[in-house]
Amino acid sequence: MHELIWSDGSKAERSDKNSKPSEIKFKQTATKREDVSNRISERQLVGKSNYNPFLTSTSYVDDLEVQENFLIPRSSYEK
Image (cartoon, rainbow, N blue to C red):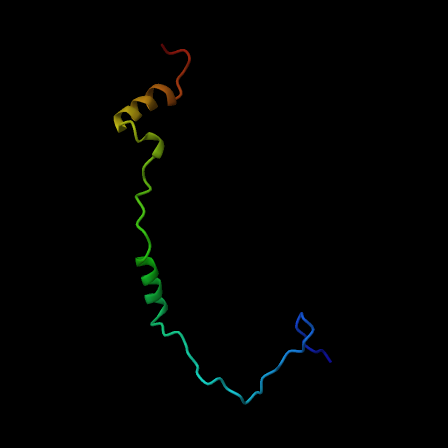
């Protein structure tokens, strides 16, 4: 038969089956949906993610011009 022993060598005390704690306190939460809604509402707002942080100093027209001049492959036979 196995016996439970703590790391300091003392035996584990087992409680009686019939003994019950004097007070039972449970966390009173409404529902999971409300908990999730509360957690989401406590978050900090984050800026939009549909911008390129490397191109903030130039305008859209300048970016199109750079694309047309340098990023589109061209034939070496054209002038």
